[in-house]
Length: 87
Image 1 (cartoon, rainbow, N blue to C red):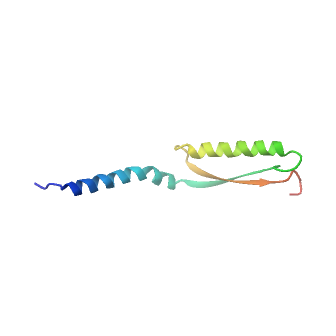
Image 2 (image 1 turned 180 degrees about the vertical axis):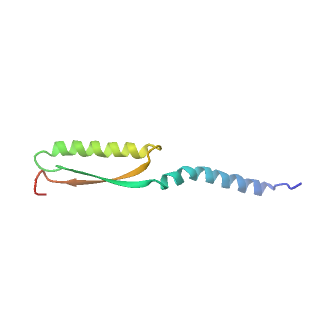
Image 3 (image 1 turned 120 degrees about the vertical axis):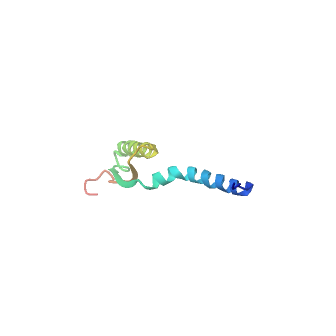
């Protein structure tokens, strides 16, 4: 009969614990990344509308990334059009 020493048992338990702890991280790392952009007036005469839109956009993406059931991981980019049609 093969008996485990206390050291071998502790090493096995530690390895199991590390494996369980890293399992969710491995699933997260496999998600494909989708890039999203918000373009709006963050400066200029209608900046208040653009700032509210930007904040809503960032909050929605943050909540979606926090959902473990989400198929993708989303990255954001925010651009200021300065409330000018030529920008």
